Image 1 (cartoon, helix red, strand yellow):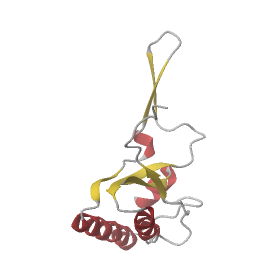
Image 2 (cartoon, one colour; image 1 turned 60 degrees about the vertical axis):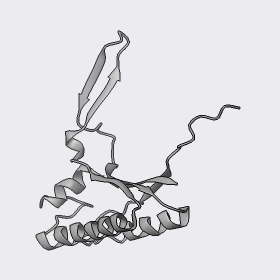
Image 3 (cartoon, rainbow, N blue to C red; image 1 turned 135 degrees about the vertical axis):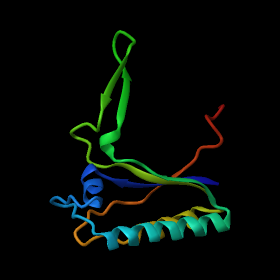
Image 4 (cartoon, rainbow, N blue to C red; image 1 turned 30 degrees about the vertical axis):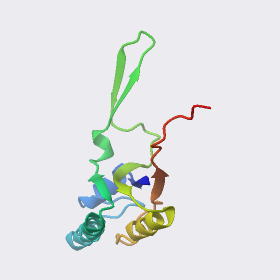
Length: 138
């Protein structure tokens, strides 16, 4: 079964990763950043070797986000950057093909053990099954 495994973050977290910490999101040093990348790369290598990895991507900072909606006149309305009330956003994901929910939960636990600087916010690792069946035809 296919699963989307997602990690969350905030603009403050991205700022912290480039050394600009803030309350609740400390600045990372080079060693901490390297430890995080090493941890994620090890997971990626394992998932590739087991054949479970379909895709994985880290996403750019939320400040690079573009929201597109449709106005009353049917024309696109474009807003750059996250809305002010947006706290957490998708920071990265894995699309996996795993034999069971238990296996993907084991992988999510590995992801959740990623080293971060002391005082960093804790985000859950989110697992969503991919609906390959499509809508029910009842």
